Image (cartoon, rainbow, N blue to C red):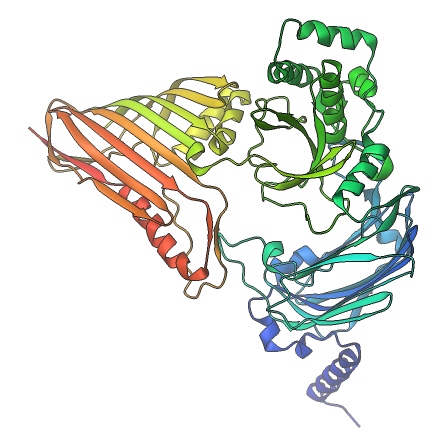
Length: 636
């Protein structure tokens, strides 16, 4: 009997579908509700952690993710870290097609054994097995499982079942078991709005969540970690690199860390001590001594990541940094502290999360946390925070990476909870002054002075290290990209590290800045600080609106007009004030050929409900429109 091609195809398709149904990885079985707004779907993610004792932990993971399109390719990687105290006992990866049929089983030789840290690291003892799938069609499913055994029990991975925008979850389970001699502290967050199943027994906890639709990413939304459910864990007894610890509060934990990580690592050569004493000779206040030493460290050392030692937590000896001239954040902080110790200036190691996004240490869960170390100087006028890894930032300047967050200060007596410095909205300033001349041909010549401080200082001060080509490209293609045929005649920078103000002086020319219509000449009076970006429109905004950092811009321009034109129209002064901030400008006629333009744009930081997004967008639309307000001149 001859089988028709169409019938053969149908039989083959049904066989494939039935086979994939058995595995449960066919795309056809994903509910439509989980495909909406999703670039990928977590089919299942099962984590099983067993704390055999405070010195041994076993981690088992099984995960399958279906990638629906190219935007979901962030899930095409498998990466499992290991080191001398964390062994990979098992690893397996399989790729499936859209019907759930296996198309590739990854063999052991296909995993790359690479360093777990970036190329800026001098040396490290942390590595990972790494595999990257190269998709040839979509959708596909990547499944992997692995088993780890670790003698480091201080770090227990948290449960965060929804950790990405535009990704839905069919099933996610997390089970942790622990021995009877351990007390497991936990911190549950944001459980209220989600159908989380939770069960607890003596020595075990189980969490499960099912059928969670993808959350679409929206501009100016909060970080996914701040709004999604999570659970963090910390045992009362733990082990790191063979060091055993026990703590159920921050004071105990801080004291343990001090004794094991930070004690007796401040030895320095006698010659260095004498040099430091001479440097601060005659200086009376601790603050002034600290400033001198901070500059000494910046001039002498550079940052290089060094990921070795006790869980990469114990700093290099101060004497080694003194000899080598480099170190990571822990080492450079220790070196600075050791030099301050020589001249009797009090300072303390401070652990925190360093990131442009503000991340707090979790005060409710005493445990070793954070990814960065800075130095705390408690002086009479208040805390000073020192970022010791930069050769350029001013003394006490911590904007955009370690500002405004909860931290743990480590003292010999124990851990102390503190909050780093906050840069208030009105201290994040930019002031632009300009005298510019408009010619009869519509060209402009201008002298401009831009002064920036607070958070905005960080946006500008790196210009001083750039090449002439990069500086000119910055002004032409970035900062004043809306000015055509711009040429930079001259520039100079002044970096006042005491007041933390960066000043730019720029001379420019531009042809055809103004446009003509018959006898009329039109030009935008806000020549040097136009805001053009408008937040994206959403018909049905879901996420809250977050303005992470506020600022204030003040502009004052004096414009000389061509003698053969007279003013026909000037925009009226305007002031808009609302919960998001303030925008105002005015144009004053000084003489027949001179105008003065004053502008203020003040934006407040804040977290607002999704219903306020439309109002915020309208505010920004008004600002963008008003920044293009034009003067109309008519030929005499």
